[in-house]
Length: 376
Image (tube, rainbow, N blue to C red; front, side, top):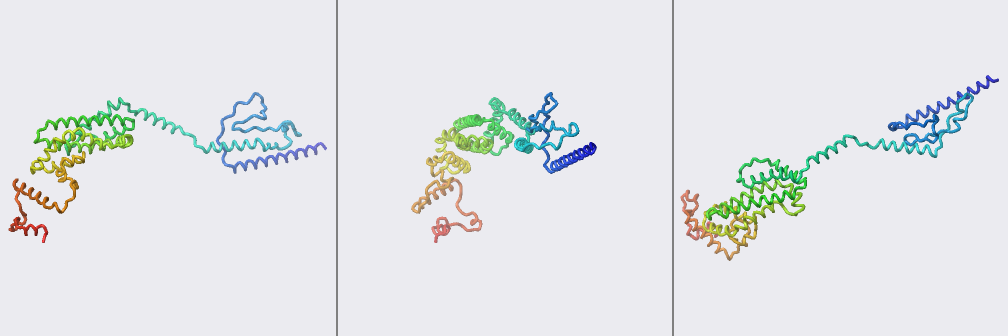
């Protein structure tokens, strides 16, 4: 009788163990269907001295260890064996906390962690920037002397001359000084430099004799305008980010204004009588020199046209009012006067091609003049 009872208890125990193993197998299969777990958490803190775990102790990651009190006291037929499978935890507290911890782990896994290389790059760029800071002492001792020497060569070169300077190096100096907030100082130094040069040019013109005055003024004007074609592009970065944005001006206009104030205005009343005198005497001054000076004066200050409108009208269109029919006789008289002056200076009248053909021109014949001009 006792043996049969023991066999029944053993069968019952084996059945319960089979059910428990089946449940564990299903849980393992479900775990394989689940996505891969989060990275391992750091090791838990040391346990208290007691060998039994605290039922309410919090594990790493926020999970709570739920222990059923009755499962530790109930004994089966064999000492220390549980009577059945362990009870499931209540779905109100522990399961919700586990789900929230799993969601937090997934978010933490998805978010990219900062890499050490990015931090090193930032620190490196910052230190590089701090190492390249240009102080005002560096600007005065290193950068401006380079710009000063280049400006000297550009202002004193003759048209067509080659200057052994590095435009790339000068542009790089201007760029670095603008980036380091030295634009105001650099613009002030540039204006002072060019002003000093123009004052020397003005003094040299004042000491020139009258027969060389026009020619030297033409050289000074052409040399300065040619230098601006190189100086303005070299300082284009300063012009864009300082002069145009903060001063609301343009570098080229400012530099042209300097020549007007320090050279042209001081010499216009000495230059204009000489130009009018040279106009009355053909070829006393070459036509190219006369054209350069007149066009240059008009560029510097258009109001100077009123001092000699006829002179300016010979080189600049639309200076005088449109011609009217009642003044045609006056225009003809002016042309005849010019022809007489040319004859007095050795120029002969006539069409050379027709002379080579053996035909003489009858300039004094009214019919020949009318036919040559297209009149019937």
